[in-house]
Image: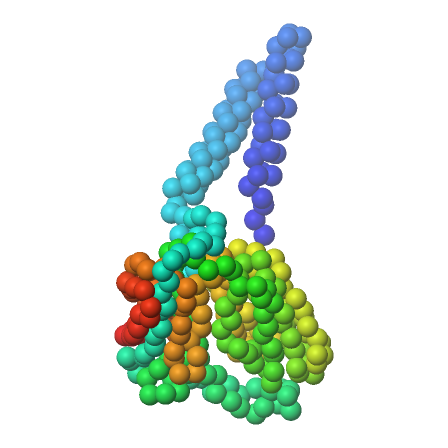
Length: 302
């Protein structure tokens, strides 16, 4: 096993100090010191200095290279906090946006999960359904929101939301919440579930939830303090996944089983409408909302 370079430099430096101290003492006391010994000591000192200097140069080069290395950039956040605090407002005119999210591509095949253990609870096999297209090409479970919300309707009064672990799956797959709320994660299974709450952008773990029995409920508070997208992922049963969207304004929803959505109480104006799905990413559309109803069709093409 190679010696620690820091230890070697320290030992060489100590030897150098001892050698120099002995030479200075001998010269000050006028002790008989052979010329050959002086030259040998000087050569040893020079070698030690060169060695220490070389190590210092190498360390400096390593530090410079490390400083010059590019810093890994995180991808843009899917849901970003507003640049300004949201404040409800009043408007004499109010519009309503209704629409459908359509899937214009062939949906990817779902994964067949075959649990190796606890089959009495998890089942022998099941389809991990990430894309739900119930009526023709209409996409269920897509997140829809306005990224530049106006001063409009008040924030939702309900601040409690729920995800359930049932038969070793998390349902619903996507939950939309408000900042400052509470997510209750419940288990309906008599097995151990270890669920991580992750920042979907950085992958950092906010919390680890341990369920040991049926009926256990664990409240989650801190990860919901700031707008963003969270991922819930099982450690024991790794196919268990769900998504929690946290918003600091009221203009958001999740498409229903028929792919439909509605955003009401929007003052007339142009808005940036964002649609996200775990398999297809984010789509951005610009929508002009007038007084009354504005019908929108969002098409997922890739």
